[in-house]
Image (cartoon, rainbow over all chains, first blue to last red; front, side):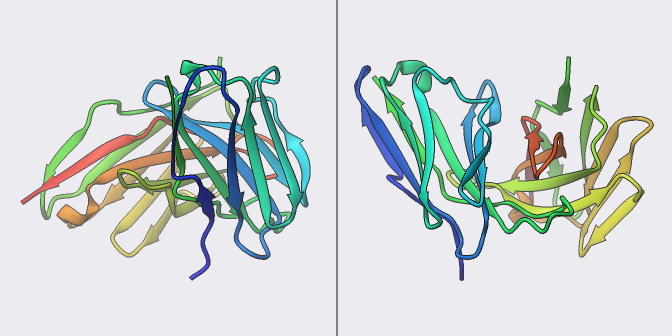
Length: 116
Length: 112
């Protein structure tokens, strides 16, 4: 049963610390998304990659957030320095893009981040 | 500005009834729209996709309609069960290359 995995599942850190979240997409999926979910804003797209190349990171605060795909099996989202307003659940999702734009995104279980 | 609105209030219905959830949008012209289910502590799970040229799509007890003139999608669950209790999110195609924008979701509670 193929699924997206994310680590860690929970992270509590202090303001100013660096946070790195990792995602392993489903094998064979060529598109990876990073979302952030809060009660106030709902599910927001931060950035996404196709074939490991960044396609859109317009939803991401550039000064402190960075997203990379070192290889096809690993995506990372880094926050440095972290702030209390970054507290949220961060989801990774992947899909096998067919090029006709009606593909399904498969979400991981999320990383719940709390910044004190 | 661009907006996707779903009922912010929770929807409470009795088992066996039909649940109807609404997704309204402004200033978008999506080629397709998707509905996802999210359970507490979990990521969203895809349920149905409907294209702009389709009026209605069904899957088992689920039915989705898409009215591009009204800029609205309705999501129906017939013969609802307590196991259908969850948050339901609509998502619009809002750009090239698979980009989706999600609504804030509606929480459905089905009681016995």
